[in-house]
Image (cartoon, rainbow, N blue to C red):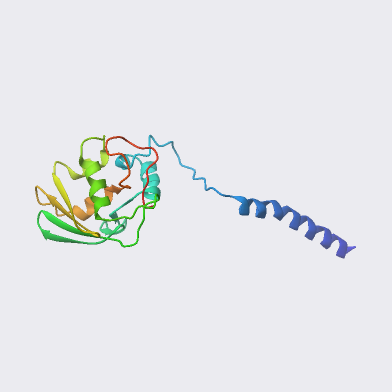
Length: 183
């Protein structure tokens, strides 16, 4: 009698586990639950809400990220940065990174993305962090960007944490709800 009870219990438990195991194997999409609906998915306006930051950091990425413990910038798409003089920074990019559309992350893509943000052609809340500074960006080589400011900008690596890098195929003059990034 005990043996048949154990056998039946084992069969029931195995049968109950089969649907969840099959469901796990069949899942092809991930659903993320957020506390609120994002206003849009435009990378240029991601710092307004926490949801925008969560969405942005999972689709597009910035050159630096701020360490929550130290408050200091840490590498993300940039591997290092050097202050050439008080108004000039040289940024080295991570090698081997691609956008979701297959385009390579390079200096031209970074120049495109930051110029898109500062151009004034979009309503861009992220640019507010740069204040009134005028920036000029130049590719030095495939993986190096030079950023010049019209005034000393000692916290440039921190500011670059809000510059979301998008594929150079992104429209320059219109907000997008289907951003293509490296995240």
